[in-house]
Length: 143
Image (cartoon, rainbow, N blue to C red; front, side):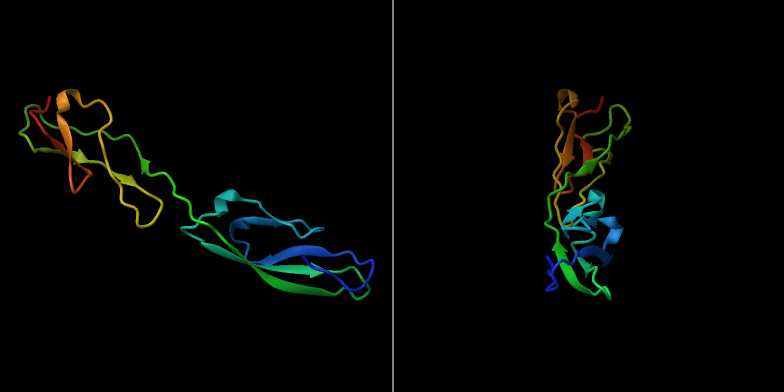
């Protein structure tokens, strides 16, 4: 919020710099900041923004001033990413034979992923080898 000691002045606000990805917009009349591009708000890549905001009056000689406005993002836990995957293994493979490696990622740094088989594991033919949970192994004679 800005003020002008000269009566009757109209103030105009603008963002001069620091608005990476066009993340924010400023109301030119009120100075209210709002999110303009939500996809530009990613704590993992840009945890904070320092906007240089300018306010200008409409008096004779039109005076202006600027200030740094720091906006700090709060990290949220994003969902892990896993895609459908297909593996092949020879019939009657020995117990403990590797069927493949399941690949998944988490956009949040430092997260530990855990894996489980939710369905489709007829007769418990497969298990997930721990502590390397991404390794699929044949538990019984594979069908």
